[in-house]
Each structure stands twice: as structure tokens, then as C-alpha cells.
Image 1 (cartoon, rainbow, N blue to C red):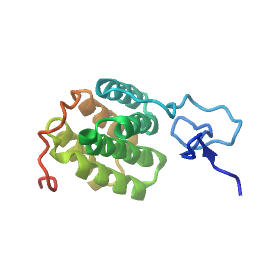
Image 2 (tube, one colour; image 1 turned 90 degrees about the vertical axis):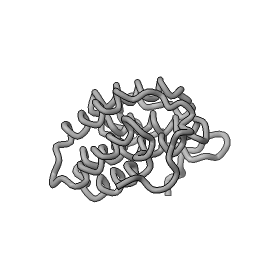
Image 3 (cartoon, rainbow, N blue to C red; image 1 turned 90 degrees about the horizontal axis):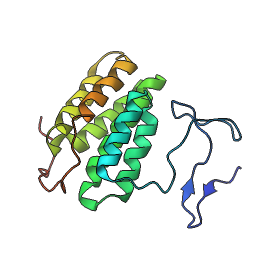
Length: 168
């Protein structure tokens, strides 16, 4: 068994190179630039970088940026960033032709972000609509989510979130 990459604190890290779709490549292969493990973006930077990566049809890498914000941002924002990251992973699965994985992650992400207000509710609605479509075009799906995310402002403490399940 090949040992996992670990950081000095023993946390698992994956240093394998990845292709533009986020798929792991063999060790030593030439991959695309990755988000560093210690990346800790501010909210505005995370939104801008995720939009840039979605504009390049790289939702896996946008997910990594949003995941970095989720893991390093204020506790009150983590559900939002986790949901946005999950929507991007759903887009990644859609791009890779994994309909089942896309459905699970688009729904999970939509459930997390739906009650955060504009534009997050619209992103959630778009993610749910993609889940309901039969064979949505991955490029159009990524572009649609990117266009909505581009209208987002960094959350202001997200204290205005309505607790409980998202509205129907």
C-alpha cells in the first residue's frame, strides 16, 4: 500500500498532480497549478478566484478555493462556503459525466446555501434545476453558476441567515 501524503501535523494531503478537470494524474506527471494547502483567502478573494476558475471551466479548482475559505474563514460563514464548494464539486462530477455524483453534491450544496439570500438562493435554485435536468450541458451549467456567483458580495458575518431548512 502506498503511504498517504501527510503534512508535519499528520493531516492527509494529496500532492499528486491533477488535470484541468481535477482528476489525479500519476506521480511525476505534469499537471495544472494547484491551490496551495495553506491558502487562506479572504471572502472577496475567494469569490473572485472561484469566479475566475469557473470562467476557465475549472470547477474542481474553484471548489478548492472555496474549500480553503470554508476551512479558514469565520465559523459563522462555514456553512455557506461549504455549500458553494459542494456546488462546484457537483459541477465537476457533471463535467466528468458522473451524473449520480453531480446530483448528490448539487443537492447537498443547494441545501446549505439556499437560505443565505441573494444571490445564494438563486445559485441554490440553479443547482437544483441542474439536478432535475436530463443531461445538462456541463459548459452551460458552469457558466450559469459562474454568472450568478459573479454577482455575490462577500458575506457580512452572515448573521442574517435564516436558521432551519431552506424554503421550498
